[in-house]
Amino acid sequence: MSPLSRRKFLGYTALNSAAALGLTTISTAQAEEVSPGFSTAVVIGTGYGAAVTALRLGEAGIPTVMLEMGKLWADPGPDGKVFCDMLRPDRRAAWFKNRTQAPLASFLWMDLANRDIGRYPGVLDRVSHGDMSVYVGRGVGGGSLVNGAMAVTPRRSYFEEILPAVDADEMYGTYFPRANRTLGVNHIDPRWFETCRSYRYARVSRKAATRAGLKTVFVPSVYDFEYMKREEAGKVPRSALASEVIYGNNHGKRSLDKTYLAAALGTGKVTIKTLHEVRGITRQTDGTYVLTVHETSEDGAIVARKQLGAKYLFLGAGSLGSTELLVRARETGTLPGLNDAVGRGWGTNGNVMLGRANHAWDLGGSLQSGMPALGIDAWDDPVNPVFAEVAPVPAGVETWLSLYLAITKNPERGHFTYDPASDSARLHWRASQGKPSIDAAKSLFDKVNRANRTIYRSDLFGDTRSFENRFTYHPLGGLVLGEATDLYGRVKGYPNLYVTDGSLIPGSTGVNPFVTITALAERNVERVLAEDVAR
Image (cartoon, rainbow, N blue to C red; front, side):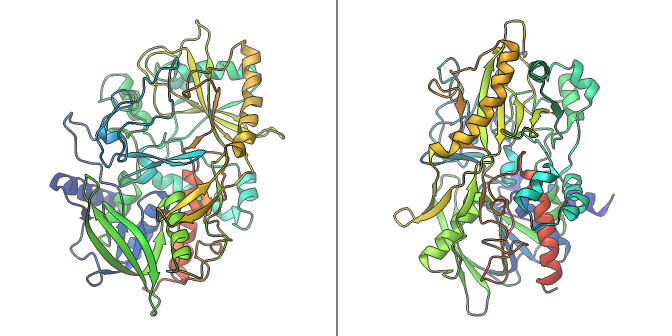
C-alpha cells in the first residue's frame, strides 16, 4: 500500500468511526492542538482549496485544525442511506430550509421537484442575494458533495487570460496533473457510452449539436465510471442512476472525504471539527490570530461560543464564506488594514441554464445518469464563447427535454459590502449583469434549434423565461489573487493569513472550476510551506 493510499484508508476509517459514534471532532491522533485553544495552523472550511491545504500541512508535520460549519455525512438515515435523492428529497437535502429549492423550479409550470421538509443542516444551501442566488455544499467535503463531478481543466489560453501572473507552464506541467491524480479523475469508456441506457440523453444532445455544426467533447469526472457500468448492469447499488445528484451521492463519487480529506486525516496531524462556524477574526500583538467560533447543534442552536488561536490561518470557506469573513473583519475594525480589493471581482462563471424541447422520436430515456459526461465546446467562437454541459433530467420518466448548463465568458463582476444590521456581507449583482451570458447562450442554442427545428422550453424556471441566470453553481472571486492577496494567496498586510479557495479566481474559468481551484491551492501551499511555515 502506498503512503497516500494508507493515509486515505486511515482517514476514511476515522470519518466512519466518528459518524458511527456521533462525534463532531474527527482525528486519527490524540493530540489535536499545540495547547488548549491554540493550533499551529487552522483551515476554515473543508472544500477543495481547504482540503488541499490541510493535506499538505499534515504531510509537512504541521498540527492543523479544520473548522467546518456543516455536518459529517457518513451516517445512514432511517432509509439506510446517507443522502436522499432528487425525486424524494427530505430534510437531508437543504441547509435549514422549510422547503427544497431545486434549480429546475417547475415542469410544465408545476413545481414537481420540491418538497416541504424539516429544518436541518442539510447538504445543499441556496444563499440568496437579491437578483442572484448561490448554491453551496454544506458538510465535510463542501461543494464536492453536491456537484456534478465534472473535472475539467480549463483552456490554457483562457487560464493565461484570467490569471496572467501565474506561471502556466508550472500549472499545466505540475499542478493540474497533481490535482487530477489526487482527486481521482477518470474518463468514460467511449464504447460503453455509445450503447448504454444511462447516456442516451447525451447522445440525443450530441446529435442535435452535430447537426448545427458544433463540437462535443467527453468530460472527465470524479465519479467512478466503472462503478456506473456496474450500476446499469444491476450488479451494485445505484447512485448516479438513482437520481442522486445535487443532494449527494451514496456510491461511486470520489468526493473530498474519500480523497484529499481522508489522506489529510491519515497524516495524524489534521483534526476536523464539524458544526463549527467561524464568525470573526482578530490579530493579536504577537502576530497570531484568534477566531470567534460558534459551535451549533443539528437543530441550529448555538451550544458553545469559543475562541481558537492559530499561528497560520487559511481561509477555505468558499467564495461567499471567505469573502464575508474578511469584509466583516475590515468593516468592523478587527482587521482594519485589509485593502479595498477585499470583496471585489466576484462572478458567476457565466452560468446560464436552459432547456430545449426534443422531438417525439428523440427519446432521452427514463434512466439518465446524474453525472454529466459530455459538453458542447464552442469556446473558440470569437464573439460568444460557450462551454455547455449536457445536463441530465433524472426524473425517472421520459420528459422530451434536453437540459444544459452553459458556461459563458461574462466580463461583469459583482462586489460585497458589509451590512451591520445582519452582521453579514451582501453581494451586489444586478439581473442586467447576466445579460451577456444569456446573449452568448442564446447565440449558440439558436443555431441548435434552427438546425433541428426545435424550440426552447419556457416551463422550467417558474415563469415563462427560457433562460435561467438568477443562480450560479460556480461562485468565484471576492478575494482575487494578486489584488486582495499576493500571487500565492497571502492576504496583503497580514502575515500568515492566507486564502486558498475559489475566491482567488476573478469570476470565471470557462469550465467547471473545481480542478482549477484544487490545482491553484496545490501551487500556493507548496510556496507557503517552503517560505513561510516554520517546521
